[in-house]
Length: 119
Image 1 (cartoon, rainbow, N blue to C red):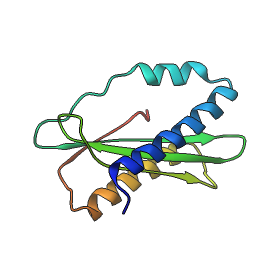
Image 2: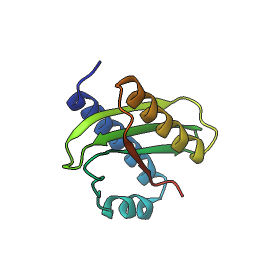
Image 3: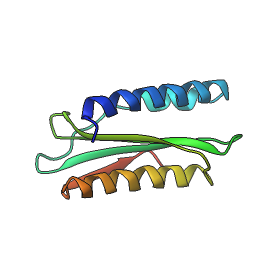
């Protein structure tokens, strides 16, 4: 299993690729709005998972990622991946959340708070 630092680095690379694709697609405002939000810590007895999915509509592919942090913001667990075929934006968000929950379960972590930007 990869370390949190390795996964965080890979997540950053994936998100940079996706951000570049979104910018090329003309959705600059959505990216800027997302980057202006601040992370809020979970209560002391929980770990917080932030997950996100991204879709490249024209190509029907995308990416997902998640990070789990404690109340001090320290990384506990992270993951990222790509989709070769995706049905839609909502499914990317759901798959990202599912991957985060599976990773938490495999690590024996059950006291979690999940946050996603999906409306």
